[in-house]
Length: 383
Ligand code: SMG
Ligand code: MG
Image: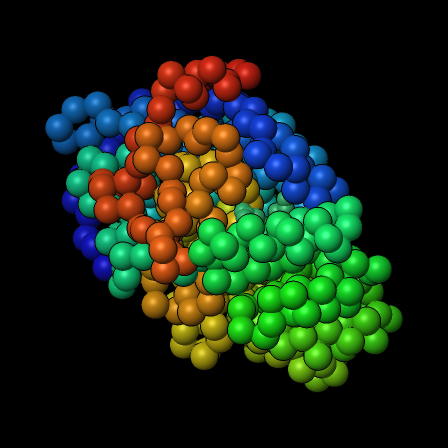
């Protein structure tokens, strides 16, 4: 930690679990399915700090269905209500840093846990008037970002979409791939836009270790990395892939926490690590993985889960740590939403960066009127 927070912390009086439905500006297709609407679980910690009432917000990154990972929105709400909040309250947690320990006996459910930690930390940091960025140890005030483009009906659609994003100022393009939509999309982008822009691909576990040939065929495109070629639980097969191809292999879904990150690095199963706070159990675990990767000489970059402005603000703070040397999947709000749920949505700067919020906590405020208009359920759970 780079900031010391007051030992008194906060008292959590209640936690509001709120579900919203926010339509994506454009549907997002991956090898495992299409996302058109984000059905998001938000966690709002209602607390008392040294100067009176204070609240904090957390965002759960799980999707509607358990397709990217085993977690999904409804399940996250259930486990939070029935198993996590009772433990949070029983432990008398008053610091964000104590959330993970209080919830540790519940196995897995890292996305649900991460949202609680974020809400408690946000409330604690707001009470202490310290930003997430300062607390986590940010060293820059803007972070380079890229854009992740889903699988599209035609190569012409892909080229037109990439063109629009490059014109907007994004310096790095990631495309989703699957068997049959891999070599030709890369060829089309390199043929149209040349070799100068950063290009990377994400398979979301769509290949098997028998598929080394199509993955090796991507070597000619000078990719920054290939993300998660194989299913989540395969680690050792990636060691063989690292040896067989030139493109750096980067695990996403497989890295479900700090222990697996350490193992994957030690095995040589990943040359680069994608850090998503939700996937690893919170921003503090994300920072720990970052610190380990820096020590191990492994580059990291910040992933994205189509977050609203709440999760995005906290992610920008983490992505401002020095080990994040590759552009993150933290695009500007307008790449995702017609209207965001925060009052100062993330915007793309002319140099292809997004500014890191500087205010207390996550540094953005929730637009409550708009939030209420997209809310599908609210439940208050008192301590
Ligand atoms: O937030 O810009 C974003 C999305 C980035 O491609 C992205 N995320 O596997 O990395 C990934 C995917 C997971 C979400 S797919 C809906
Ligand atoms: Mg990925």
